[in-house]
Length: 178
Ligand code: CTP
Ligand code: MG
Image 1: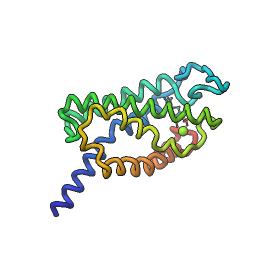
Image 2: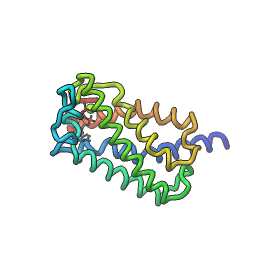
Image 3: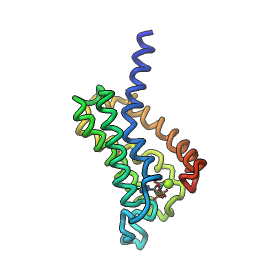
């Protein structure tokens, strides 16, 4: 009974921790558009740096949305992974910035590999999560990075990312189902 409760409680905390990451990652689909993050510029290989799928509005809108969401969460649900709610708020910014940087880095890799914008690429499902976790490292207590937690984050994200993209596609928000 006790084990069950603490396990369930832990899972809830892990899900709450993921809120800024998931909001930052999904909101650019609705917030994005306009000027490209790479300003249309090409890399040395003659291909776009990030491509047309990464926009300035999506980048900064995603960071703002994730930070706001995580900021609200820090007031109503202080997580044991952070020293205090203020640090948790700063961590929400680090997580959101990491998510959008990871997302752009994924696109950078795709363009270098000659994969067009919007085409399927398996690492799209988790690169943003890993970079986000790296960015939050200086602000989190060591308990966050317990193997169980990290595994939970990765498995859940690899499952949820394609699922939510398929839903966004059905809802008419995204042109492709991945
Ligand atoms: N988006 C954006 N700005 C970002 C990230 C995403 O405007 N920084 C918007 C774009 O409209 C993009 C959509 O969200 O098409 C879906 O994002 P994503 O799947 O990450 O981009 P892709 O279009 O698949 O491009 P890429 O192949 O570079 O990942
Ligand atoms: Mg995509």
